[in-house]
Length: 366
Image 1 (cartoon, rainbow, N blue to C red):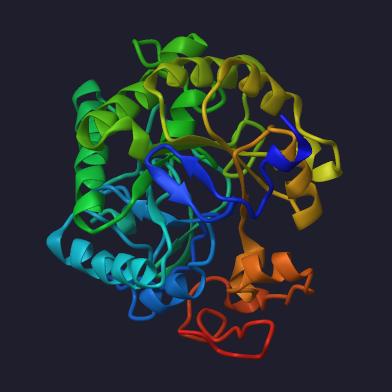
Image 2 (image 1 turned 120 degrees about the vertical axis):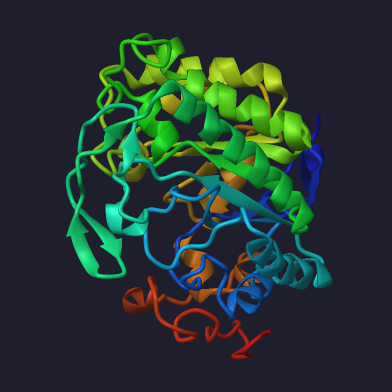
């Protein structure tokens, strides 16, 4: 292979059934602008369409069923109204040539009874996270969750599969299973949150069982080539710890590999954030996972180019740079400076700080 044949950040690519115009992925970012009925907000179609020059957009995390919500004003995808709301988004993105996947989540213990109709949050084990939940009544301390029963676990697996079907009905090109950042699947994976003694706890293989069952159900529903999974092995967000993250996450990656998924999305924190090439967990995961891979956190265009050209990732996901730079791909192509976002408008609010960022030419798109 010559240097001319090597992939670059801005070259076309492919993740499963999804063709990419470039390898710049818009990472999922919660923006808390959905309606109270969990339907995407009125400006969501504009927001995502403005950023459709990304090779792939992965939406904000989206509830798979009743009781899976963990924050106020986040969207779902399990009712007809939600499907219709998301259809406006996918139509807008596709109209300008973009590709879009929805991230599917259940927040588990990162929730509050006021968001669950008075029902207590659930988790693999009754261990509370530190911190506060963002509810419609303001910030409230996380409650000690109730341990899920086996039949409830199976019902949530079904919710993920049904949400994947709804996603395809809504026009999404693919889905990403959110198994990261301290939410329900991640809570099962890590031994700091999972103290179960049944088939879903104990060894790394058994703690990965819920992830594998969710993945199998979603693959059966829409096909492996339209399914991705996100992991965050070094992320301590939401009180997450694990005694042996390399073993835990290489086990998960090894069990996912036979599915032939469209991608595995690894969020690199810890050592990666301190300037190292990759955390040891990323290298360990790559050693057992041969499929398409997206890497995320702390990348600039130059570093992303190096990683893609070296074949160490199929694509690189960028989060906050996409907030203030709807034309991030074009800025990368031209070497143009990046605008800074207004952090006070990241979560909640209206169009301000959401759809009012101009392009590098000072033009408001959408």
